[in-house]
Picture (cartoon, rainbow, N blue to C red):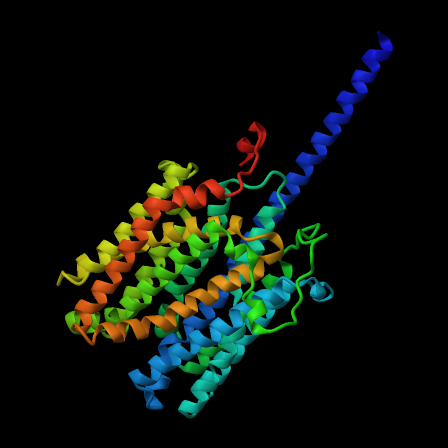
Length: 456
């Protein structure tokens, strides 16, 4: 009996030691997730703030150099094309294990993106001709920090034993969105009201970028690369090889990427007439635009930072049916607001409508980003989110073509509203009919014991 009891005690002690080691690893992984999310969000906020600080002065420089609406439209299309090219390439580079000696592909790409942003700002500031303005666009191909940071977050979540919960993924995605929204809100206001010259705005922007780079250097790396034991991603090969991302061919990925393309296309089509409508109906000037877009940044930050997670918790966002229902409702709100905003002549009503739409858009973005974090394979994170950024760029290019084609049959406002509402209606029907069946049921389900749930 004594020998048997002793053997049982040894087994019990061994199991307790294993459980304790697992809890220790999980605690460390969650600490890495928290630290990486905070540093990454702060770095992204500083990067976007640096760009938005110079926005008021950039427009003045374009006007002084004679860059009219046609010129700006052409430059926007060119930027989208460059972003499309750079998104896939930088995503592929960030996945490479060959760059571990330089601190890792992700960290290197983030630093390159910050340097590219600084280069573009300086060239734009020193521009003395429209040709110089075009030259300032070239570095934008290398600035893919948003997609790279999403890949980093996915890597952090993947390092947690048993996986992370939907709420944790939504919270991480919301942190990036909140940082971006706050930067979009504060940057233009500070640049227009506190900084009197373009040189002052550029100098403060460069300081922000230096701080953003410093934060990237402190971001933790995941112990035990998830790609270990798998084929190393190579940075060589043709452009078509860059487009070959197996994770993007799964049914959930195809469904989500299609919805993302339609949503981004709807946004860009709508933007072709919205700012002009504000000017024509409400006589908007530079300060009015600044207040309006700062309001958008504020509500987007609140949505991604607090409201999205609260809505997910309150209305069953942790269940398959609940997430599909929330997505469908938010998609319907976005389409409805875009239509109603053109039917009112009350600026106050426009502000209220857009506040509701921005909150709904923030919830959609949070849910979709959290799902994308699960869809992408660990060894393809950079490529997958690079493909996502490239898809957004393609939507930006197609939007102008689609809007122009529709105006050949109807007036610009009617045609644009018809296309926008139709696209949102299509997304709404897709979410209702297929999100739960195609996406939710095919996502990996993290395993949590009771103790882990309490910790989360």
